[in-house]
Length: 353
Length: 253
Image (cartoon, rainbow over all chains, first blue to last red; front, top):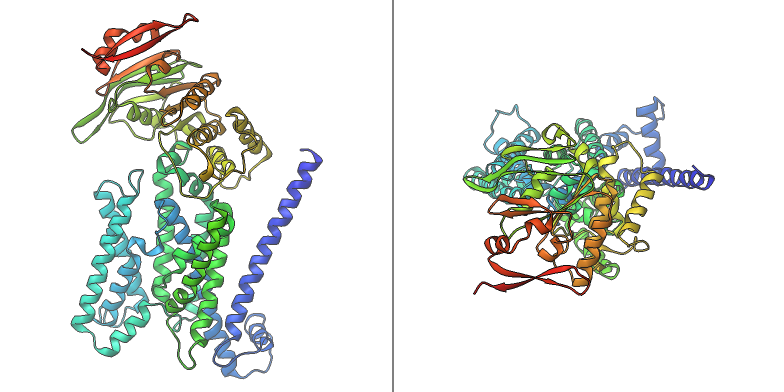
């Protein structure tokens, strides 16, 4: 390599390191903001001291209630919001690429509909006699629904394969309709007003009940899922001109589709089971990220993950402080803030197209 | 033999689209595939590209059965330019051609200077150097076809399969694309509609109702009887002032 090439490679490496560190700082800043802002605001030094006590074994004298709020409520919430936002956003990106459909979102495979049926089955019908948690019910429901949708798509002749990815979208619609109907059926048959309210709240996304065991689940699943997707960034690019074109470029289409769609489904199912089905992040953030950095997945995937994470942490802060003394469902905030923001991006994007 | 079809067949349920097709492609030659609409040309190309797996028979590349090669190996040996492939993504010419390197790069391998070189050369070979930054949506049909061919060349294939590359192009672009393909030092199989264009190939295979009727040099294959039987038109060979011949078609009286 010539000196110029070496110099250029070094500059690219520096730039990359710069981007990665800036991203990490940004997400940490968002989480820090999420911890400090709330009904009672916690000053940053108090947050720092709590973290030092818990993680480094320091012994600052702190009000145990403050420390509890920071450590058990706000921090867990912000971390889960960040990883959940990143997961949903990445799932949206890869599903849009694989299915070549701009309207694809993480819930297109029937995952959120199945999760809601699973949740109401546990919550209202009391399946499992209290042994099953709401999350576990939702997770089971989403898996059942996903498997049914994939089986239907395969039976229809397309499925996770080269032919007509349209079939998987249609199968997803069929699955979603079925499970949404089941959910409504169970609610109207068996629920009282209190339960309906609870279910509604859960369905629109809710980070209130998030604790450390949820963090321990969300963080590794999101990390694994995101890594799997980034690992396949070049294969995802190869789908630009369709599955046949990807195959002729040397991509084992069936295998890659199974792995990547499987990873997206896994992330989505876990996130939905923890926080309910938060809409908008999985469809709007991917498009916003595309407008910013273009369609190549090497850049698109990390940027989408970062934007999704930061967006959901901020949306969670909004849901807590927008209406005093009341926590709004986070899905309301994501749509209220996201829709106008997205409209702006669409209008601005038209000029560069 | 660089590429060989052995008794290839493909069917959807009971409908046979391609039936017992056998032929060999020699290294460096340009083989034209002609035949009426629905004769199985595109399906045959997809079978040769390994995008469809045959219901019967086998494709061999350099003597190896394709069924035993993995997708990456096939992608490094053989490139396929589909008939119509478009995208709604906002990508540039360079992005599209870079896709051709997919089979050569593993997940941990960074994009290298060599890849840059190959992409640049591929663009030069289709006469599109200097248009790297153009957006896909601003390209004309002929330019898009050139980009697709450049992407195929970036795969550094030994074999290039093209499905009606001159479709929807104006006459100038038709001629320049065919010239370009003929000038490339790769073995190529091209599905064509225009019999006069097929005359320029080294050999021509004629498809009809899913079968390969005959294969040979253009002058052997393209006889008046065959054109009448297969395409349902009567033809006349005329001689141009430079001594080359061309075909004129008329409806059968």
